Image (cartoon, rainbow, N blue to C red; front, top):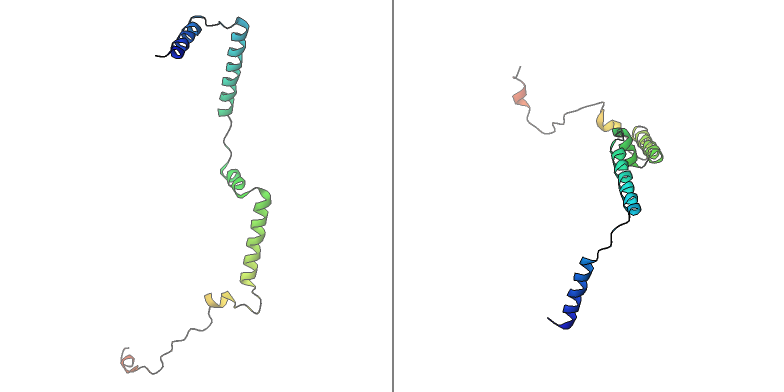
Length: 115
């Protein structure tokens, strides 16, 4: 052990022996503050939970974002059902008027006696 380490050990020993005591006033203030913090933590736990839809609305970004989403959805539905002339009408793909079976150049003689 070097001389500096011995001096340091002596300083630590002296500091352990001469611990200053807290004044009664400071002790009361610390405990009062700790009690207030504890009570505020208990109050925070008693708050009612927000509803599912309120949390979803906040996740989307609030009423302003929700309004934009509704407007974009309405525009998409409108364009989908009332498509402009230069776009194909998607309703014709779903509800076709005629359904034909193209049997070009096929031998259908086996169907004649199938009744």
